[in-house]
Length: 474
Image (cartoon, rainbow, N blue to C red; front, side, top):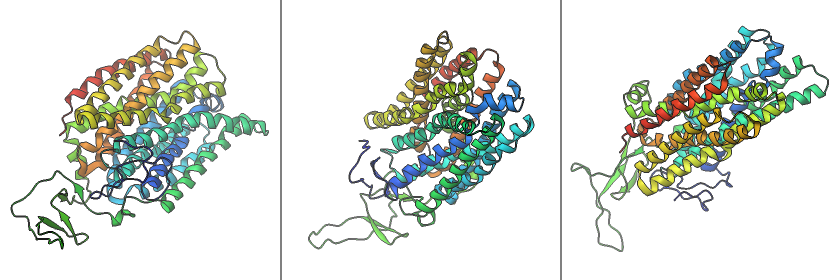
């Protein structure tokens, strides 16, 4: 059973992973990694989407056209596709802690240099390099996968992913307030948005150092100390070397095997372990040969991809469609991202609960239901735009299902092929960014009729939902 406040934290004796979650615990290694993973991803979002809430001001200051703004949205997502694909094997090789720290510290540089931009080409190029920080999603999910067992990994991944994605909502609140504060101090609009960008850059840099100094990669500590083993189903081999273990008080014999890594004896009641091969580029090809990976990439494209596309346009859409101020539109736009405080976690929790009741079939059914409802309410949003109140209500509902779907997707990912979780996480994550690129393109095509763009996205999501029935997992 999923325990969100487990005391003491139950640990699987074989995998050494946590069988529960205690949100009030910050101890190493399990819950420290848990909290740093989501807060690192949230911090990354403050850098990745720092520009979006300030688009009305930036557009006017740089004399940008709507097409150029949409092109910059596309490039900020396109670069993330490349780096999310590469980051998976790097997590497998160097561990999530170093990978996360490196991404945050390096990406802080282009975020901080945003104030030097003077024209459209520079702005579009800058957003390409800022997009690198979006790859932090992969070590975020990989980290908790190393720390938590299969019984709670869906919930753990959903919590850290959702709370990290909440960074988009935080940014929609934070950046306009910083901008207004700088204006109140006497700076012009031209200077205020440029100085404001230094804040998220500094936060990203400090968070990167914190990951490196105050956390662990896995239950064993540093990635180099991990046991190079992953659990498989229990089975017996006739040629297995056996030894007789005599209990001082019992005259029974137990079939055992020797663990060469720690010179310990493993009971026949324990699962047999397998030593995976050293991470290589071949992991990509192995993962891509698995049709389940391709399907999950489509699924994540229609969940996180939708989230990325909406994050880029929602503030400006409310500003333009309802003639709201930049700050007020940002506050409403923030609702979409802030729903992640529980929505993505709910998707992961429901996935874990269904798994306990019906196995992997339960996970798949929950996922189908969530993604299909996601599509329905995206279409409904198109017809809710006659007044602000209705639009906000449907925005909140479709944001819940969009983000819950992200959680249900990554509740399935660890079961595809445990030997290459990092590579699969990277590819599925990249699928989300491909979806973001495609759906951002839809918003660009329908730039003069954004409500239609929401309806097109919703129809596409409903169609893809039926691919759930093509997934085959043991």
